[in-house]
Amino acid sequence: METYTVYINYSEKFDKYYIGQTENFKSRLLLHNSGLVQSTKPYIPWVNVLLIEKSSRSEAIILEKKLKNLNRERLISFIEKYK
Image (cartoon, rainbow, N blue to C red; front, top):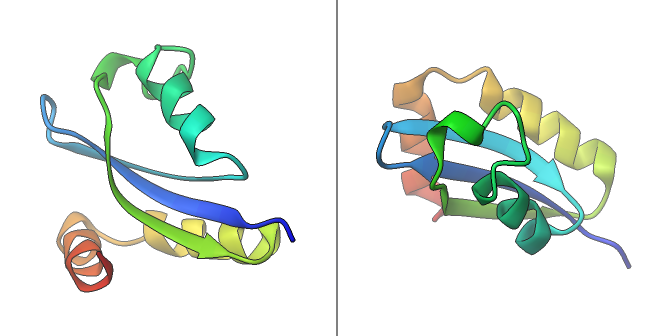
C-alpha cells in the first residue's frame, strides 16, 4: 500500500521552515538540497524536522494545507508535539 509523507524541513542558515508532501521523501529532500526546487533553492541546506505518514494523497494534502496555515509559533508547537 502506498503511503504519502507530509514533511517539515528547516533551513538553519535562514531560520525558515518549508512544508510539503510527497510519495518519496528521500528523493524529494535530495531535490530540495540540490537546488532543483525553485521555491526552496535560496535557502539550502534543508534538514528534516518532522515526517508524518498518511495513507492517501488527499489526507496528505489536507494536512499540508492545515500546516501551511499555521503561524510560526503554532507550527513550532506542532513540531515539538509530534516529533
